[in-house]
Length: 122
Picture (cartoon, rainbow, N blue to C red):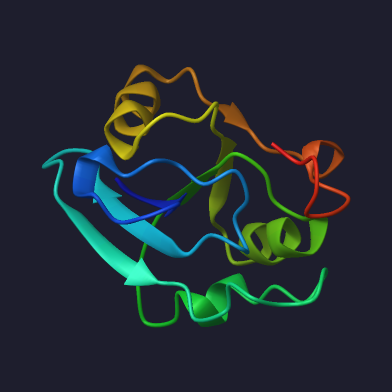
């Protein structure tokens, strides 16, 4: 499975998970089987609330799921509409996310769990 993880900075498997999807400086695409990672800069990191374009920022890349600390309802809806499962992360690193996905303990994100704004959302 290929998962997309918003990160604070690219450190490969040791990349720290970002608290918010749309404003993360970068994304890491991680293959949960081979543990290989590819970093992608987020050209859409600076945007007005509700104007996140997650699929545009990740255009041309294929992934099965997103693991996030926080995400706005609009971005969550766009990802879900594209058939991408969104899981809630409790932080940590990309390596820890891969382990959690592998054990099946990740919670699927719902619209009720989405953020109302960029501040205080985790």
